[in-house]
Amino acid sequence: MSQELWKHIYFERATRQERLASANWVMSHPETIPELIKWCFVVKDPRATKAAYVLEMIAVIDSDVVQPQLGRLISGLDTPIAPPTARAIAHVLEILILKYRPNEASKEILNQEQNNRLLEISFDWLLNDLQTSTKARAMTIVYEIGKHSSWAHQALKVYLEDHIMTGSPGFQARGKTILRHLRKP
Image (tube, rainbow, N blue to C red; front, top):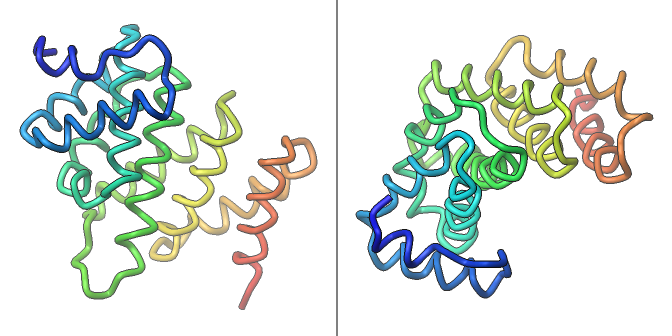
């Protein structure tokens, strides 16, 4: 990571104020976004989570800045990542999918291979021992992308019906909402 980028995304505690300051600096230097994304996927480096937190804040502020990097973000998920990093990346992906998927005016932002990869990653997040927020975001991603898949909604429905009663309150709340959508004719 370049010293300049690291200097601006380094923070002791991941407070909203610190993440916001870092995100604003990166947004004012958009040429650093590909490097920031690259650092989200450096295995066993604590800076990966900080980079993911900053990317998450950027997506919350202005998802249009991150959208052109979506392919790079999905490609990076081929490497194992720490649970806090997965949570932040899942949030970024959820924001992008919810903003761009239903919008008919925008072109498809993902090709079929990327759709399939994102479905695979999301199901992995659901099946692994991760935070509830990561699983909840994965449910939403599968639901949205699954609208154009012949198998994803059925697999998600079966998974939720099997796990809804044993999940945390947050898992149950999101799961019930998704199941309600899946059961509509």
